Image (tube, rainbow, N blue to C red; front, side, top):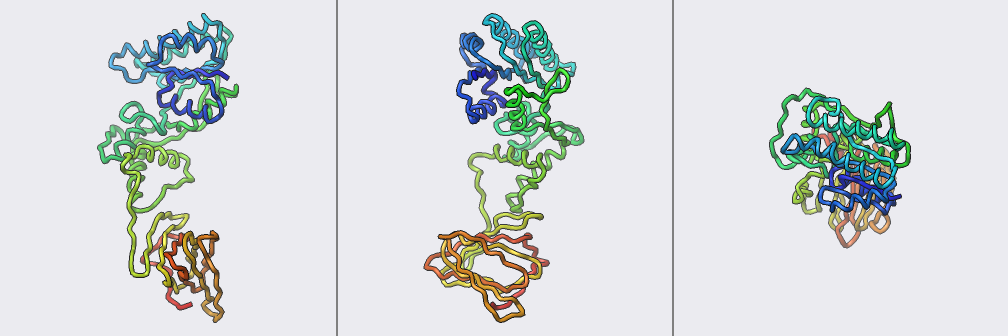
Length: 369
């Protein structure tokens, strides 16, 4: 299928074009403001589906709203009629089309133009009044409060909040693209004359700001967000996409002694803690047991032995472990245990505990294996 995408370099266009290519579409006509004029005539001769995403959001002259959001739509439709092309058209409009402002009026005019074109030419049109969109590649300090907050907070810049209680409806770019792919297949989500993206999220401006600020602090606390919450998961991905390119990495506190090191990596309240343990050759660590705390050990480099003894038994159980054969060893409660490096190199072990370390209740009791 030959697909025309107007506004192909914009936020939605860039995400859409790349996902269409990922899905195997090879003939994609990418049209943007810098595309040579004659190309639109060529594209409207051959295209079989149109994603009309081009539009004006923040012009210097308010008159440019109508020129960009209505005028270019009119030009596109005239060329399609000239070329006798009845390709289905998907138009991205805005919830502001219901408002009495220059931007909303221009979007409403574009919608009405397309509805009339559909009736006169027996062409399928899919008009989406989109809410506030967010995701990677949206332009900060432009028309997305999410991208602005992410960009500024990641750089320790101030953010402006007029009304923290104001509620917003947000829609994630991947959910938008998935819906557009359904429309491309002839199965848009529709209610009345308009189509819509079925997955949206509600949040206040104040909550949004605090959530994004918490992401920044997680590098210090080693926490990760609650990925069970769909909005939090999407916001966190978006926040990471706005990190300064010289700030992708962050240091961890290594607790180093003559035996090696122990470094906490990730902490969660409901999924436990992940740490990295490095033991030098011949070193034994552990010799303790837990009432309730349980762990998983995974040696990823070097060779070692993990030993267990039930605290009321004399029998010692041994497991040989090696980075050459990755296997997880569960550390049950009620067994004193240790891990010894029996190789010639440092031994690296990934350790998971079912709860983050609590110095006030460590649940760790010394006892030689």
